[in-house]
Each structure stands twice: as structure tokens, then as C-alpha cells.
Image (cartoon, rainbow, N blue to C red; front, side, top):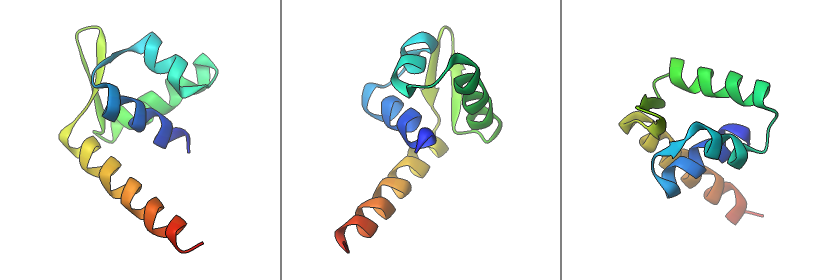
Length: 76
């Protein structure tokens, strides 16, 4: 869910300053930094100056996750 919140914020808001993204994540700063590093290591997000943005791979993964969740929730 945390990864989803971070990817969701970037997908719908575009590039965000790290502080804005941190606030959208609703995590402690230490936890947020760990998740952000994890996402960067996997090539889903990157820094562009002072902003964090989704990579092409990150956008594709977000769309797949969203579609899977919608499919799962439709069955309930």
C-alpha cells in the first residue's frame, strides 16, 4: 500500500519535490526515505533536479498494479 501511495502521488501529480512526496506518503521521514531508496534501486523513480519523478518503468508498473487491484476489487 505504501508503494502504491507513492507511485499514485507521482502518477497523478507529476514531478514532486521530495518534501511534497514525503507528506503524500503519510510515513515517518525515515520510513519514507527507505521506500524512496527502494523504488530508486528498482528504477521506478528518479531525481530530476530537486524533484522526484516516475520513470517509464515506474509508470508502467503503476498502471499494472492499478489494473490488478481494480480486477481484484470488482470480484468482491
